[in-house]
Image (cartoon, rainbow, N blue to C red):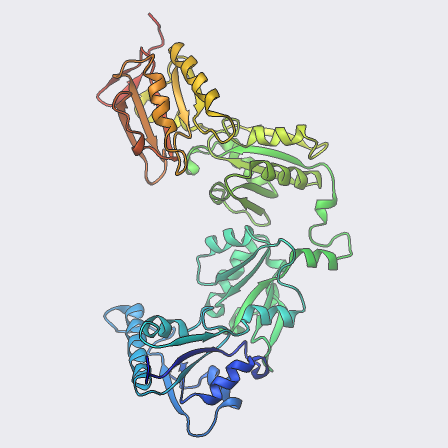
Length: 501
């Protein structure tokens, strides 16, 4: 790259020129070319922030957006117009770089945090030396002018664009402790709706033009939507800090100091709301907290004021303890499971933690749901019409030797088998072993139902035979039903007779 200019993406910070880094100020003063974006009115906030550090004789490249919020007659619509603009802007900067001139592209906040510079970087960094100089973000600035920490200890901070649909915003806001929602302006009403739906409107603050002379800070619920510019955000600061500030009995979260809560373990069924029972729907609506594996929590309709606690797939014990602790402090908690909570799910995990001494005095109830085995069976007929066995092939919580012994016993007893957790990315040999065990007792022609994502968008139901079952075609989203010696399959319909002759 000898002889070529250098490209710098320089973060200017949130607006106060004194919050710019020393390196950013130096590079601005040394650059041959200063580039900045602006709307068609020509005024650039980035340039006004950097102005104290500019010097005489520098070239300026004003990159004027062809469209911001208005419509366009570009054949590719808004996206097409903006893409063409970025290509043209990159070519203009490339001409300076090819001539050996160093170019600084000014960017409010941080260049890689919703920054306009990133579109120049992706088009030029493969041809020129390109360096990004980070800047103080608007989120950090908002926290500082509010005088409250964003997060502390193990709290989770979520950054969201206000352009997301309100239901999605509400779900994500309910799933986190602290949050910042950017890009307000025209999205303010959408964001307000989402905060209210997540039960966090009263905890949110509105911060406009943080660190500017014209900055504005007030409770989000009090803001006039007509007065909101683009350079504003919603902030949900550290809830732990807020709880320590509150010293009145009516302060937020004090209901968690009460007693008399309960845990209700709710089965969601195998897929969407069509599989949810009326009893489960009522319990979910009445809960103050929803606790569960992230994808299952996401299936629960959001209710205003309801707190959501999503976690990973392998922390059943920790999830149960969290639910019991919430309930012990007076809350009504719903722990959600796919299918039925008593079948390889959270009911036993919660009761196990109760037995270990957690949640003393907490009432625990179980609300059943349609099982994956029932759902899969319904798609092909009645393969579970006689005695059957439900068995998980996962050896994460029990050794394979026990699984194999139970498979052998069920096979010898001529039971239909519903096999859960048949395979995963790391368990790729167990299903083949299980097939071989069952073939000791069953004919190769025994019907096998391979049901994937029952009730979901990728539902796929196939009927094969035990002898032709291909383990490589089965994953964690599948459930298998292996017939008995009496199970019949004709024209895609599978059933096991009630009579055993």
